[in-house]
Length: 518
Image (tube, rainbow, N blue to C red; front, side, top):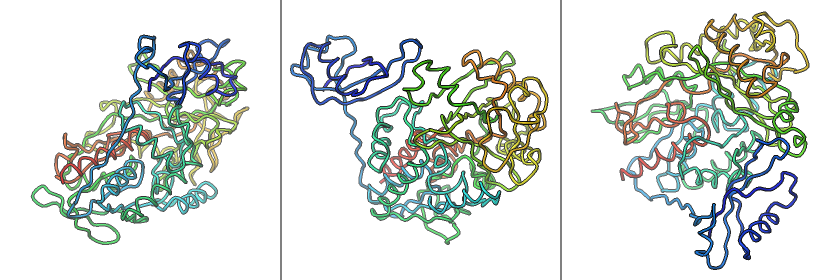
């Protein structure tokens, strides 16, 4: 089988596979068959001629004859084999987000019958708790947008693009499809599942883990662990003590009690650079028209990814852009306001939203301790709660008012989607001056990259504080903590991933490291 790249079709194409077969057959002057789309993206650089760009695998007679053609090479398939292992003590995983899920899946298929502890609720119960919070402001600190089955990604756009170049990504995508995700995630350049579909996928993977002998305890937090001579020997949970020589710590970026426990017990923890900012909302139709022009009506809702490096030295960038999405109330602690973005599969909401973040280096984080970044997050979340007026209302400001350094008084044409309610304010009441200036200047510069980004009536909502973990649990080449043998800091919360895909891949790596020992 061969693969060919850079095949272009108009975005108005009706039957893409039929047209691809026709076009490649004409190029090669040969009959091709068994076509498979490997990658599909949109090239919108020329607004008058926006096209789909494909990478395609196909069969043809006398393959060697066609390797001389530009953009053609042999197609390589990826096969992932899971090593079977006999592990004397069942491995334990704490946290059932992407890292914990894929670590548990691999260990279960290896015959290791893992035990998973998740402090939050299973996804259906979790949805009810989150809906209650959105409607009433009644926060469950154990089960919310941050905690529960599926992790924080369950209430997101379900984005599956990643900056890592790891073949394990193919395994993750194929497993998601096998368990109910849309097939196009395998070849889309910017794949997403949508929060509505992702929830069922997570439940289906959980059922397989349980069928293979794994056990998952929801509403059960890990509270302690015991180490002897530098080796892990047991964990303590709300369901009792469990002997354990292998623990995958996949707790997510908001597991502050766990970070404090680790620090208190002398586990090597270090603060790391991270980012804080706001969510910014625009009219989705206007974003699509700006990016796609007259093709906006025939293409999916447009997304964007923007970055600028300011003269002050700070980087300001967009992250986790949700086309046709909503801002969600993402608090996990009493008395703090946290925001995030979410889209359903159809991405058919009126607004787009994105995190707009200021990158913080270690020198920008107040305090000297390993957990000082975490405490800085908390401080800004508390300020947002107070400025919002309590009951988890979020502070908002129109972009035009932020650029003019004045408080907002009323909404314009763009209505905030934060569900609990909003309070108009000036972001200087929340952020230190250097961050406020970075946001203001960043918006102005990003408008040069995406006209309309600085729309006076665009709405910014504070505070977006959980885009990444402010700490790293130091681990060695064997993926174990440098302090405790058998403790595997895993995925985003421990500082080794950033998003669903990279977290899932890191979960796989930790499972592989455990299996290699036996």
